[in-house]
Length: 328
Image (cartoon, rainbow, N blue to C red):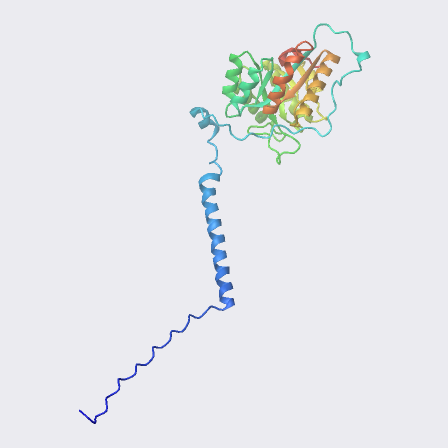
């Protein structure tokens, strides 16, 4: 209608502006970064632990020796300490100057005694394959002692009982199960000795494993040597102490007796072993015979494999029974 004013449309209110998100403060940002870093470290540690459980965890303890022999398990258990070597080693018969060496009658004789056998059949087989007469000295209670003794007998290798005896360092250093101890009375000592000898009935003789204390005790040596004399076994003194009285004790029983001249490999370094081997040969050339003690190390086997062929024209390798004599 004329005269009426048109109604203006209502103006829309402008939409409220959204407030921009509130930015976290610098302190909150640092806190979040720190928490993230800690979570990352925790994840890395957890992953490492899982890898350790599945791939790096030590093997379960070895089965008892008897069970291991019955199952024929090939893995060798942990070896006991090989020896406690003397701080002062007085050679029984050091090499003589060349002008003092008596004329030789045939090649000098050398006996190599391989100590501490009973824990690794494969290593024993490797030494047999070297093809040089040796004497295997076997610990009576090793998990593979019987197997190694049977193998040696089949191959014509002479064996000895490596008799565990008390060292000065006992009990901090343990010579192994069934060791002959200076605290034993005569009955206990002889019973334990006979038990070890019966365990290796084809042994021709005995030498001491450790024993730096036992080999200085006359009363107990008399008990030991009386049994060896009755069984017609020889004794070789490993000379783990310069104070040993094995020789005069063996003399009383007219026991066949010998003494170690050279420890060949008590330092596991190639040049040292080669030097000791040369020393053993020179001792034999000076005195007509010598006794060396070695141990079932891979390095020793390797050096013997390399060195012995070149020595075949200088010495004659013999079992220990050929270099023992009535003591004194």
